[in-house]
Figure: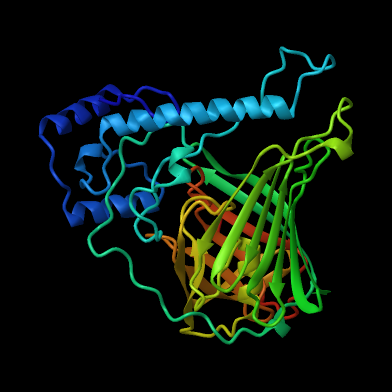
Length: 404
């Protein structure tokens, strides 16, 4: 019986007794009503403990497979550690007593119903988690609603070049909303190989590490807004993605940091891997949050508007670890948002991400996304991203005092 949590703490005695009592009752499948309630609770950020034996045989894993995966993950982690030592050899100027930087573990928790993935995520994302998953919930019978018609009517002329600044605040069960990220999104147009394109460069401010800054550069077709290529530089890792209407080809390269003993020209990349994912050519594939901001600004939003976009399933916001899928998007009403620039009327755009959809507040005047409100990842079920610089709104409503 598992009596511990992911963070290493022992479960309370009463919870251990509950788990033991459930196991003594025998292996029984949960009905759809219970599963729907579990999924709704998880979507709202509540941690729900579910014994692994209630999961159907199609998605459950026996104990031997769990420990086999754990052993394989440990081997991979060891190989990765060896690779990092090779990339960053110790020098005399570095103290051996220096503590390594901490890295949060990759969560093995599944996506909730409506997230678009299978109830037991598989593949590389699951393999790379050093903590075997011993409990997860089934999806209710029937799954989520099917895709809406693909979005259409994009008007690229509404995409205005410029630099926007954003701040993200996140919270969880342990703390209220705290500043999480500060980043800029620069949008411009240029010619690339005789083709008119839109370039989106997203830079996380204050992320300069080892003399390198993290950045995400995405190139879109100027007319269709379909992605063409993407490059993400993350200190010692470079991710490159090339797109066609029906495929995504990804290459990931480890990039060593030059040292005094190795000249920059002699540095090679000893680790490289990649894969290809098939996409639905009928649906615009949206590869990042920055791209969705641009797409929303080009859409003819109105009351009752709705459509669907293509996305990659799974928890990763960067790597192509899951199959291609879809997200339904709809205008659910009109709101007002108070910002540094004033009180602005917005479309309330809901992005289907599970039991509780994300809310994107899009200016009715300019199409700029002023506020996003939703889940960031499994560690931060509540997160907001605010536009704080680069406003273009001219029409402002009368400000309203906050309730005290």
